Length: 372
Image 1 (tube, one colour):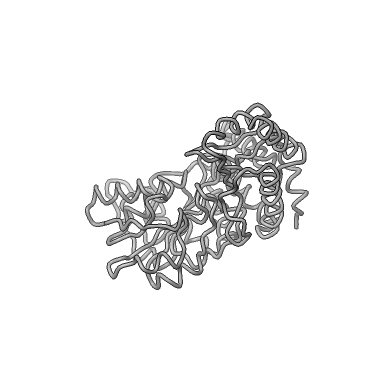
Image 2 (image 1 turned 45 degrees about the vertical axis):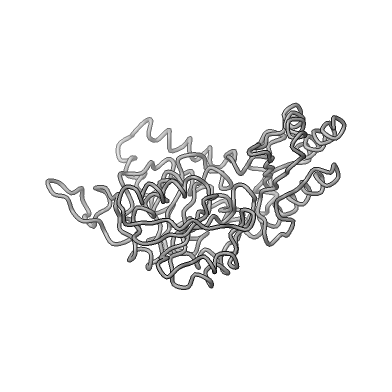
């Protein structure tokens, strides 16, 4: 096993980086793996390209370890959005989701509804942006066949109660956009039917990486609308005929994947598995508490949850309306990277966020407090 401290030494984030909910800088191990395979592709020595085909099984196995889904229930995707598109275009019936979900979800549902005419969205009301089992229960209808939730809400940082939602929705499909928590939240993914994530945020595998995991129920319920020539049961490339898609997650492939991207994702997930998601989550919880305590010290409003059971890696600050520009400028002037959106400041550290970074964050808060 690798300790959290040993894991952290493999990264070289710039001090002041508090924006992992946007993008996670990749570490040394992933960069070295990418370099090795890119070099292999660059030379293309005799017999070496066949080795790249092994990356598909490797990455599916790595996803399996962290999700509990079987490797054959996993298919590599270049990003979360494409995986969600596969799921939404494959559904028939009423699908429930909040209009405040990340646009990857709302766009996929709307595009599928408009294009095929077999899917209809049920737009849910939330409790101040939080979808809970309690407020979901009363809004479901007899026509609802699936529910879409984000594991962690990108605006509020709220960690959804997957087990509670599963109990409420019964045998309807549960579709989880996991990107804002995958790799740092020890979630019960086994209660979901569809889990989709990208690897460029908390997993720290870079862009062009992701996966779609489907339960056996989901495989039976979904139609692989976008299914390419690599997604059949044929062991060779189908020539002069169009074969039906295979039965399984592999049907949701359009073309050959990027093996270097698969290697980046597999490497990052293998590193996380060596440490353990629970251990990463525990260390991250300490970092989150420090951010909240600093905000409290300087009387900056915290609107994300203070309960550890309802938060992952995001702290949302909401200063007074006339103080937002001052806070944003103070953070910028002290080299602190965050995301500002809709009058709020999203602060998202990782286990690699060091003392120098927290000193920079505190200095920014001191400047803010002095200015206001």
